[in-house]
Length: 233
Image (cartoon, rainbow, N blue to C red; front, side, top):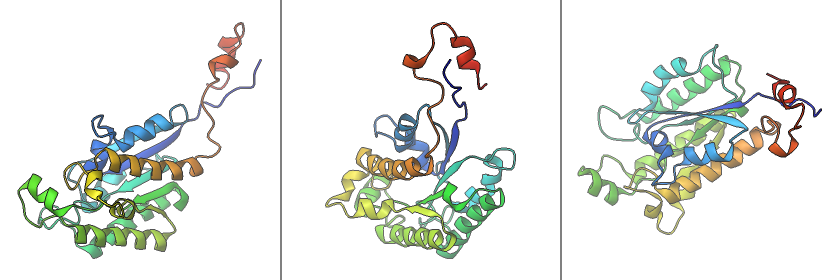
């Protein structure tokens, strides 16, 4: 009989705002859906997107999602689009934004998660005119502000030894980056594809050793399959 196969799935938490909540959008080729497809039979992609949230609220929420009884193998933290808004209800000052990201990472370290198990994602660029046309509000979300908050993510990652996906840079360098956004703020299909590829590249490296769970159907023994499939349950 074949050797027992591992039944252990790596757990990957995707924790973010609306860009994460919308990450399973079929019409926009959502980045979370792309990860779930790529890592099927290897990892559980746990979707925790909260539209409108900033790091102030995320920091308060995190212990309810990840705690000593529920420590994942990997977590992606993707906030900043709302922190960078000028709206009083959602806006978080840049210094506090850095502190909140740092606090969330340090909380995870306290649960025994190493820096290699945490990935920060910068907010993407904003196309000012498209967002204003969609929202009807002038100047509350801007390219310049998003860039400042993206730089802050890079600083926090460097100071803590945590990986960072700089999706701001990758999208902003496109000749017409507005095509990567569906409304000037949220990712469209091209933007989702860019982010998914960047996160997948990190996960492929970090999840090395997590083998496909259960045998391929071609390896199943037609006579001893009950024992074979239950061997590691």
